[in-house]
Length: 230
Image (cartoon, rainbow, N blue to C red; front, side, top):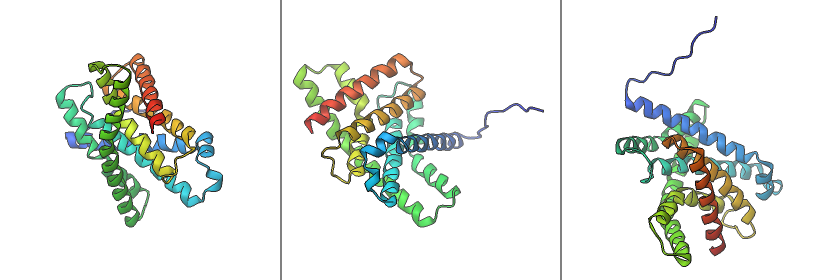
């Protein structure tokens, strides 16, 4: 006999936050694996010339990039919601790293590797969060070269900053700093991370597809201009 499925019951907000963080970690892993298995990505990253160890390292960079992107979105000051909900989401962001470590622990990953992952997430978060300032400044300069900046222009730049910072850094790490001639790989990363970013924000804010499309266009436009200047 079929049984009805009941939603999980949480006794505290902390339990709900932990469960939400775990779900977001699963989404990050799924998105990273999807890109990692993409034939075009593998071709552009030169997988045929790389060892299995390098393959694993690249997947780790994709995954940690997705995790940090989630963390940056959850703490973004421009999330379109009430202040109390914004505070709650920021709290979830602080639980992302622990949720990923817990998921690895359930798979039987050794303690040393768990410590390595915890260190890697911390390093990339600090790096990409710091790089947001440079990305924002560069985008503002480019916009100002074409027209006077207004509130709408500033809002658009702010909206795109998290995915910009992560994509640029992730591209650099995947290529081990040798990014010359890797523009197509960069554009593929932008498209993939931009899609994940927009879907995450729409999910959090309850937005509409029309808004999603506008953000995608804005992300791609700013990225193209930033990359031409780099």
